[in-house]
Length: 458
Ligand code: SAM
Ligand code: SF4
Image (tube, rainbow, N blue to C red; front, side, top):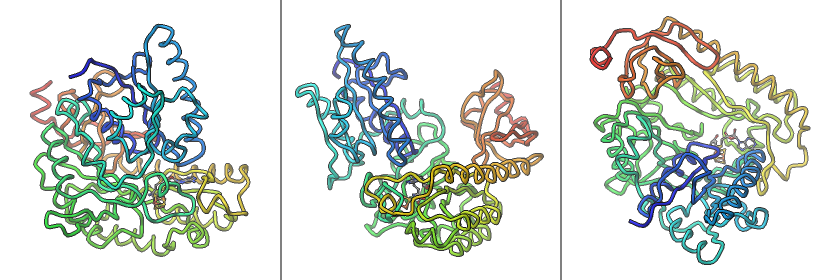
C-alpha cells in the first residue's frame, strides 16, 4: 500500500451522489487514501456536485472559494492539496470550471470515477486533469466495492444504484445531459452487492436510479428483469428486512411493480412518485408523457394493492406558461391525493434544456408566492399524516443514537423518523413502537414490548 493520504468528500444533491461519493472513497482506498470528515486536514478534496437547479450549481463555486483558501494555507506550510470537482456540474461545465476556479486540479464527470487514481497522478504531474467523457465501459465494473469495515461504519441502511441516466427528456431537466442515456446494472451484480451489505449487517436497502422503475437490467439468463423481479429476488437475501426504491416515473409504474407492493412484505409501503404539476397543459409542456388522470389512476391502483401506502412527490411551480389556473390544478391534485410529504421547487431554467428557451417565463415573485402556498398545503398534509399515526403501533428500524442521551432514532415503514427512549443495543434492530406524540417532521414513541434483546443489551 502507498503512503497514507486523506480524502474529504462533500456531496451535494441527490442520493445517487451520496452513493457515488462512497464508491469514490472505496476506489481510492487501495491507493492509500483514508476518508476524513474535515476538509482542513485533507490532501484531496472532492466536491461531488449537483446541477439540477441554478442555486445548487452556484453553491459549488462559493464552496470552491473556501477550499481555495484551505489549499493556499496548506501550500504556505509546504503541503500540497488537490481539489477535484466531480458530479453533474463537472459533467455539464467541464474545463470551464478550471477557468472560473483555477484552484481546481481535477474535473471528473459522473461516468469516470473509476479513472480517479489516474486523474490524480496526471494532475500531480501536469497541473490539471479533466475527464468528462461518456465511456462505453460500465463504470460499475471498475469501481471498487466497499470493505466490510467501511460497510459496517456506514450503518444499517444503504443505497444501491441499479439504474442510471434518463431518456425521458422532461423539458425542465438536465439529468439526461449530465447523467447520459438510461442504463441498468445486471441483476447478479446488484444481488452480489446486496449480499455483501447484508453480510456486513445492513438490513434495509434502497435501490436508486434517476428513473429507477424503468430498470431493465440483464437477469442471470441474459433476458431483462423488471424492477419488480429484481425486488422479489432481493427480498430473499438473508438479512435484508426492508426494501425501498427511488425515484420513480409515473409512466413506468408497471403492473408487476404495483403487485409487488401487495406481495412482498419486505417492500415498504412508501413511494416517492413525482408528478411535478396537476395541470395537463403544463404536464404536456414539461414533456412528462402522462396526464393528471393517468397519475391518479396509478395512485388508485397502488392503493388497491397496498391500502396503507404513504405517497410523496416532487412539484415544480412557475414552469414557463404556468397560469393561476394551472397552479390551482396543482393545489387541487395535492388536495385530492393527501401526501405524507413532498418536495417543491421554483422552476429554474437550465442551460441546454427546452424549458430554458421558452419565451413565457414566469416572474420570480409569482413563483415565490406560489411556492409558499404549495408548501403550506404540503406541510398541512404532512402534519395530518403524522397526527394520524398517534396511538398506532408499527415496526421501526433503529439507525443511530438520538439527539438526547438515552434516545435512539429509527424509521417507520412510511419513512418518518421516530425517536424512542431505548437502549442503543437496539440500533440495527427492528422493534415494535407505539407512537405517543408528533412534531412537524418527527414521531416520538415508546417500545410496544420490551424485547428480550433490549433487556439483554440494556
Ligand atoms: N427522475 C425524477 C422524476 O422523473 O421526477 C426526478 C429527478 S430530479 C433529480 C429531482 C427533482 O428536481 C424533480 O422531480 C423536479 O421536481 C426537480 N427539478 C428538476 N429540474 C428542475 C428545474 N429545472 N427547476 C426546478 N426543479 C427541478
Ligand atoms: Fe429528469 Fe426525471 Fe424527467 Fe428524466 S424523468 S428528464 S430524470 S425529471
